[in-house]
Image (tube, rainbow, N blue to C red):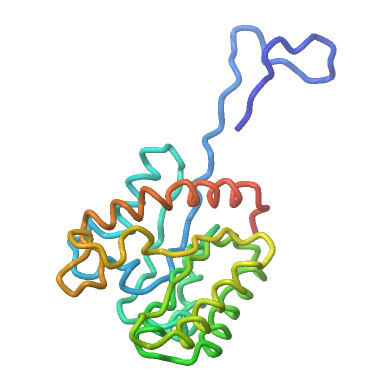
Length: 218
């Protein structure tokens, strides 16, 4: 944004606007945010305007963030699926990314080590392109046992320590398992649950937007 400090002294080396003219503020560039995820991002079972991406977009608009979400949520996707379609999703030239994957790896009892490889590769690719990331964590379903649950969770704990990464420890925080906040399947948020997620995550997304603004364009 072009601005002139109030009270700038004459002769300071900075040219003032000609008499009778005011400096014109340049609009902020719109930050494009890739939302790479599964059914939780895609808004499974909900009208489009009640899904995560639409509700988060509304929150960003209300905050005057000058940011646009690119919906890359695919229901049923695992970490492997997200990695396989990453280059396609990057064709929209995002400035930042939200990565929300892993829930379906846990539901299928897939190897946490392979999930770590897939998620790490996604983060590596985004880092190589200087795309700042908000990385969202997940827990495994409790019916798979404590050892699997610990190994699953440790993947997110390790990846979250990468330098420069913004981290949301649990995408379904304050929503998972709560009556009235989830749909009949007990796994996907109802509109009230989406509202809680969006309210919690919006400050992190605003930080992501600011980080993207401070990152040189490619």
